[in-house]
Image (cartoon, rainbow over all chains, first blue to last red; front, side, top):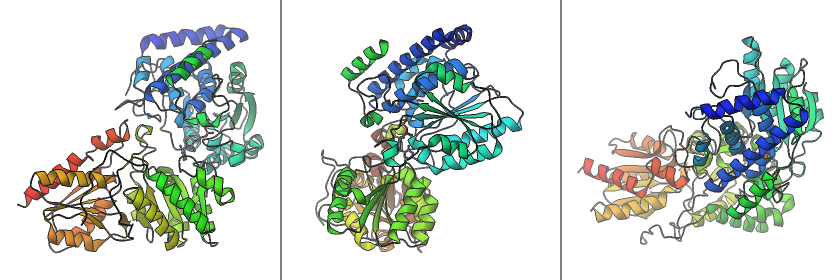
Length: 293
Length: 320
Ligand SMILES: Cc1ncc(C[n+]2csc(CCOP(=O)(O)OP(=O)(O)O)c2C)c(N)n1
């Protein structure tokens, strides 16, 4: 099991404090900069490992950054704290994005990122809670995160805890029936302590979602299952922050975050082949320069 | 008996032969259809989709649906090849495989792509090492593990004509050609190298390694027979009994858990004979793999030619 990096965790705490005190424009700038740093770190990991899911990583990083640097009540130095909010990355193939985010928050040393996918590394191609603090359950096969999150939300309620459960789902992932079984359970039980964020980039592994197996109208689907639904620009950090912290009624919340696969790297944006293509060293230099702007 | 083929530097991804043969069959027979789970690329169905867009049913990321849809097509006169990464096809849709395919006797060809630890660093969620155990437990389902591109091709053709519930493990980890001109023979082991001291029964990626092991063992004066057991269920029990009579021990080698796959199947034959022979079961012993490439993990779990040779030598000496 990796252990926290106290210096980075301290910097993360300062960030959270500054963020809490900041006005909207400053908040937006803080999250934007932080997310792009994680994008850069992730690209470096993928380049080194020659493997990863770069398109989905770039797509989800604004959501992950907003959660870990603005929303989640967690403590990187106490990953087992019982009343922490729970975060589940159901689209586990974007582990690289999660690792970059967790390392930036101090859950483990950033140097560890260089081992990504290497022999015996804790940082497997899909996240492993047995090895990586901050990972709440093992994902990789799609359609597992939501049922587990429902269980966590039921547990929080049973134990009288105010902790909240957040889960990030891919949109292609929603073709798995298990999601809809869990959505029904969450709606039936009125799990107001559960928020599902859909990374709605409209691409899956091999094609567009709507060409493969139509998901729209996604908002109506979740509403019909007893959820409150919010739709936001998934790269607008302030809009994400508002949606993720909005007052909750008596139903679970689904945040449909409209995103672009490959976001931030011009030659990757909205291109299906970048699902798991590995960028060349040259392309990483170009991408890094774009992200620094 | 033709000369043993040692691992040549050239090695092949069996998905290529698979795709090629499937497209050829589809040209010959319009009942052939393909069903997949957002895996047109990883199941190598790009050409099939180009030629037969209407006969490629991509249900999206939904394996249970995929297998059920395959069964419905099969029960309506089509010959569906249901293709998905092996861990998800077998793990996620296990009950569909049992009830809709095997129990219903619907002639679906389940194609488990990139099995074993072919997905290396993507980890245990993406490894398909339990598939042989799971599927061998299901009545009426054939479990086929081709060893190289030629045998893959031949098994695909067999499956299209056999019209039986079948599972084909289609390898991605590159393997050398080992079967030569011998076509896939349903239910029969093929002797790739004869020997008199010990028998190695291998399947899939382990076959070329077993041949290498046999060659190395020969240099140390031990004669090793190598059986390619490409049909794991139903098992060629006669070949096992012959090995018991004619050699002194049996090593099994599979890129799978030993809790119910090839090794367990062979052992079940061996221990029910009047005079069992000693065995070594090589495979993965109920463990999730650490992070690593496929080649690294095969070494980690003792699945190299050297490991097979060591096991064979131990057995040869035990009984000497
Ligand atoms: C059960 C299962 N089936 C198939 C896969 C293979 N797979 C990995 S990622 C992916 C596409 C995911 O698309 P989406 O959920 O939209 O994620 P994103 O586009 O954001 O990467 C597929 C099919 C898998 N991981 N799990």
